[in-house]
Length: 259
Image 1: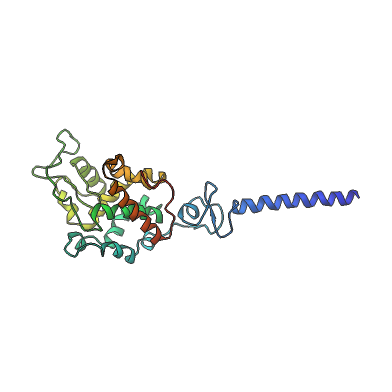
Image 2: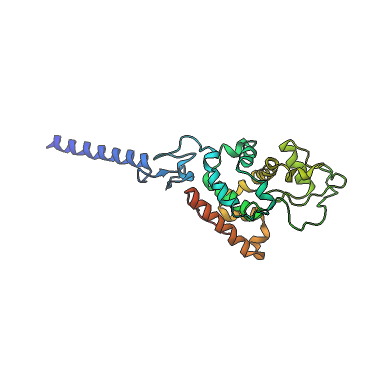
């Protein structure tokens, strides 16, 4: 009798150990799902990428050129009118080349981040139609800035996929890219690698830090006035592009989509 009770206790302990092991192995998720670093179940990069505990984890980051395929890029730029300057300027290769100058971007980029980035690219440039601000006026020169003084006769209006503006931004960005954009701001509209480089510089400094807060936070980082109710149509357009690209790239859009 005592032996039977002892065996029963052994079975209970063994079952308890197995249950804990199984739960630890899958974090309560189905075996076909990934358990994220924070213990949530899912299948996209936020779950199966860095910090993934179990399931079909991706042991290494997905190469950028596998995410941004030629087909993905062409679907966007093909919607621009043939008369657009950007149609003969922006290329998928120029984006990849520019991205490779930012190792911290390519090392940690996910499909959801690409969906976010290209949603804003699409809205800002109208499907890569524009390479500079339309109807710009003024030189956008902050004469009080001594670190990045304006060059004589140069204007610093919006250029590139994120409309780089003001002399201090041209100066700081050019320093990172190794190009004197203060004396040659027009280089942003004559070299597509530099053009995408300016956008990625802005992204890494001003947008990526809020990426984890949801797509809405990235809208606010790019254009706070839109989020303050001044252009709900623009907000909705950005969200529409974002959802479309998440679908194309096979990832969930996540929470906090609007601002």
